Image 1 (cartoon, rainbow, N blue to C red):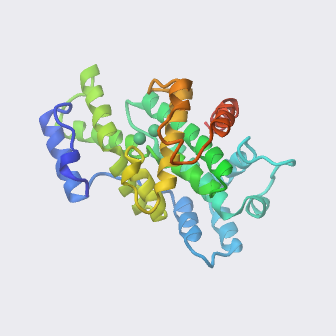
Image 2 (spheres, rainbow, N blue to C red; image 1 turned 180 degrees about the horizontal axis):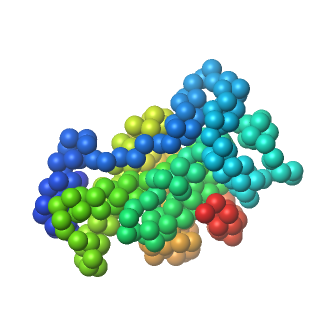
Length: 291
Ligand SMILES: [Fe+2]
Ligand SMILES: [Fe+2]
């Protein structure tokens, strides 16, 4: 349930605002399910006794997904010295945590980041999320933290935005209010901006992703509120701003990033941060290869 004081005020028509508020209170906002294979891989990754043979069995059940998975396994994000040509090879070489990241990326691209009439905005959000995922991964690598978890934090930090946009398109339709003016569309985007962190956190909690990830998504705009995943949340907030440097929409300069307030608490020295900034081209390549 979302706190009602988080509800945006005057940007939505009253009947839309009311219905959204009711659904948030009742926990009945339309939320996308994870596709079957991704859901099963997430469950398996939560199981400390997970068996790689089970992972292979799950992946073999969906041929369309398998094709996407092999393509992504050979993208610049994961590609090794020789190409991966079969699912069994992907399982052996990449392991469960990376394959969970791949399955969730495919799900985000195909089904989660979709909203009628807002395809440009949502496509751009997906790009931003991939850039944040790639930067989060680089930060984690330099800190010797869990790289796969960092990737997911970046990928999913804004997942509430497309979900809210999609739900609001549906609510507008239901109450018969067209979304054909810049003001009306702006209202949808502003409401998504105001509520996305909490809605995204609730969504990935329903998907059974680990609680550390849920907390990170919930507090990525107010990392001081995170308690159990405070470092990961700060890291994601920094990766978010690095992604803005590449693709906007937030206007942020290299100079502003170099004096980012999270560098100190994350213990990132200026030379380490400059090394991160030098990854911009590599991050762009990853983003382009995954779209
Ligand atoms: Fe966000
Ligand atoms: Fe973001």
